[in-house]
Length: 382
Figure (cartoon, helix red, strand yellow):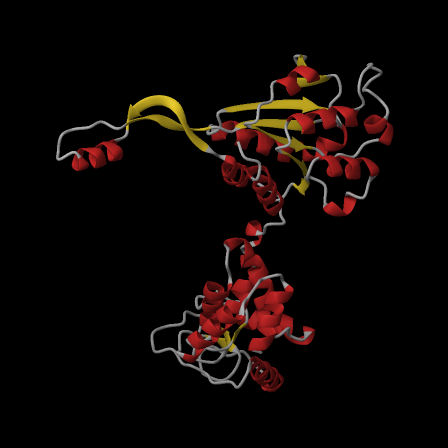
């Protein structure tokens, strides 16, 4: 049974090493978990590296220790029996010894076949209260809960609820997730206003036999300049709310030396827009010229369009470079660029998506994808 847990964890992508697994087994041997509940919390504490893997752990745990699925003929009757659960009452908890979860399941099926009426209290039949290992609201430490509020917090049910789904790294993001990821870009340098460094002054004064010697340094400020380039309209409409969260996070973070956001449709042509509604725009060549080695450029778009829009047309009949040529100019001016694509990767096998991805490193717009994109941007020194 325990080996099945290990295999299920690895099938879910959790990298459980032999050292961690041995630590878990040692914990069980020393009595750190004397029930399925205890095993759940011990395993999660020892075998899971990050909260982002909690949901995958719950999936693996449920697959290993999932409780009995009752035959249909018992469900309605049991639901009526157990609808009005009695309080567990005072008294010591009772531990039931079963050789395995399978043995527990077989015993439950046996008692269900034999049981003919509702039971409250007692220590054998399926019911409420008492010390029976089957039912709810009782004082049994090891058993299968059916219905009720579960004051004892059955581990299999906790895992089955999958309350950690929002922590998965393959899901889409909220404003806080964007802020955490974008913070990875911060690079501090001493180029702000001069001020007294208190710690440095104390250190220098101590070394100078108590005679005060001021340590004056410039403030450490973030040297990164962030530019957010967002595709708007058309096929990006379903992702408008997600892109708005990214824009909000970048704007609210206020830790970058500068931040600016530009809009385009499908790909950049002659003009980049601050606001389509007010026609506030700037020539694309000027935007490119404004980039410095400190700039980090984050493109957001599905990169999917008619091939002629990227490879042939210059945009709405305007003369000049094609969309791909404009992107090449951006990439040459600022190699520290990434492209975040909100579409699932299974849709990326498209000529324009492949072409843009070959020019600018492309990542999915998920928690994990954004983290990898920020790590990519950090590899370019300032």
